[in-house]
Length: 278
Image 1 (cartoon, rainbow, N blue to C red):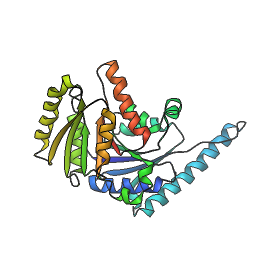
Image 2 (cartoon, helix red, strand yellow):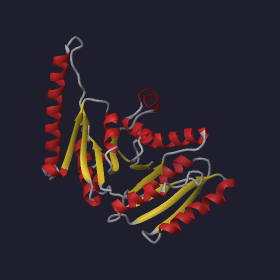
Image 3 (cartoon, one colour):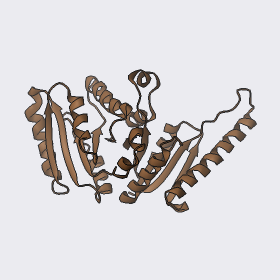
């Protein structure tokens, strides 16, 4: 199955950085690159259907030219990129792309948002994470604004946060490793536990480290204490070449709510580059 990297481009101030990142990641993974943009479709309320369609056509033509210009600035040739410009709901467009039979990774920029905005408005990145059966890479806008940091953002060191209650999706994980094997230098499997779970969780992440050590240098770590979320974030932030990897999925209602909050909070806070496995 051929690799493909789908980058969602919104023409914000960070789009150039995101396009640069998409170009570099697609080169590493030998992936087909797709730039996707949804036009706003803004027209007068009393406009007739013909006028609406004409406005949308104009917006789509203009967006396509902007995408091509963006690609050219990154040194990409016409055949290096597939362009998808749509007036329809962005997530439906992504769903249709995922049906085309590629080994897809979706790259999306994330703007930090307070909890009130999180609850009221949601976020494209978190919706994709929660609803799409694909690997998603969420890149904070703060990182995109720092060009030096962005140049170093490749999946060199992966910190994989897990729980033994939700075994690693090894197929999706192996697919990601196969794509980015040329740049990955270290794997670390981590978890955070309460005392009753410590032995079982330690054995689980240890077994994964031993299994994958043949492919990449691999270690494991288990955090204890009540501030699990803060511990993980602080640990990952210590190394600028580190990308946190988590996995969505659940088996019970309580765990589903906690895990969804955990992933969404990281994405919405926009403080860490994050890879989310399906």
